[in-house]
Image 1 (cartoon, one colour):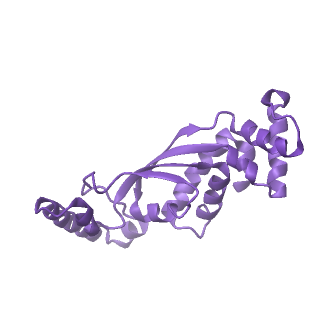
Image 2 (spheres, rainbow, N blue to C red):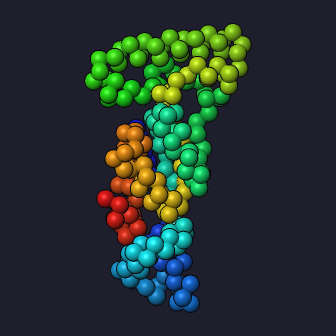
Image 3 (spheres, rainbow, N blue to C red):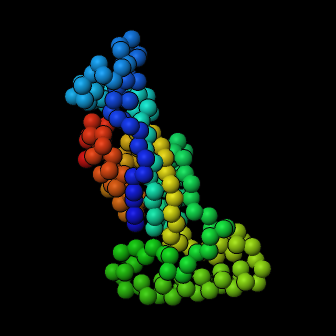
Length: 196
């Protein structure tokens, strides 16, 4: 899995603090407040459960090599925007498949790969026989790899990280949520530091 931060609101902590201050008629000018003051306010907002100012900062990630199963979980976060590699226009390669560690450890990984290869061969034959790719893709398993762009605000990223980063979450989406958290905590520590 590859997770790359490709875009983020400039000075995200200042943007959140500026938005929060307007509700009390305080000056919203960034130059009136230090980074430390912005972070102190953000920590108070977290403590108070006042989440709407967190919507004034956002980030975009490029994600590569996750399964369609992981994608199905991720797209349940409806406040996020997604642009996903098309299975209609892009041919799936036979090696583009996620094999969970549990399958590797079970000794069944080779059999999994053989079944994936058989399904992919039938997918190829279907396309060559004139079956539209959007119909042939029905053969491809949930383990098929995909890539996508995801953009959302920091409030929703907090929700994704809390929910999908928990120990109860499936391993693949948990790894993705942990990657989001790691990168976002570097650029906006006051927003994400409490999610460790």
